[in-house]
Length: 148
Image: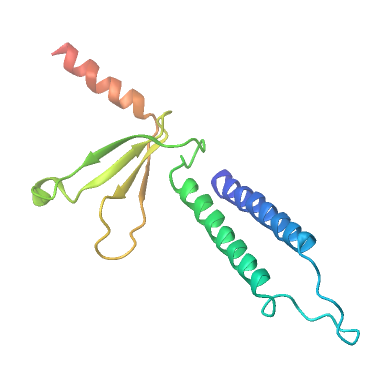
């Protein structure tokens, strides 16, 4: 639940910033003179204002994209950025090792995220694998090798 709340919070902050930018744009842009007690809309009639509103829309789309991209590479438990990318698999040994993937690990051992290196058949969702205690599993493997 914290994972989705954090995403909603980031999107809310980005939306607030973009709304403030739009309010600043409307405040600083000179208003059109009245035409028979009617003020025509600026969007669509004023070319520079329409261009500025289009740039604002592109900034909004970019902010949403950055929020979602940042959220994708965060731990599902502690919300820290995933670290230590490791490339697994090989194109030349695909039947033996599988397709190439990039694996990210949570620094505190909460889980791993497997992302396909190349998306052949459309957009593939990354695979999150939770671990109870990843570092204890890794240390246990090294202790077993020391005993032998």
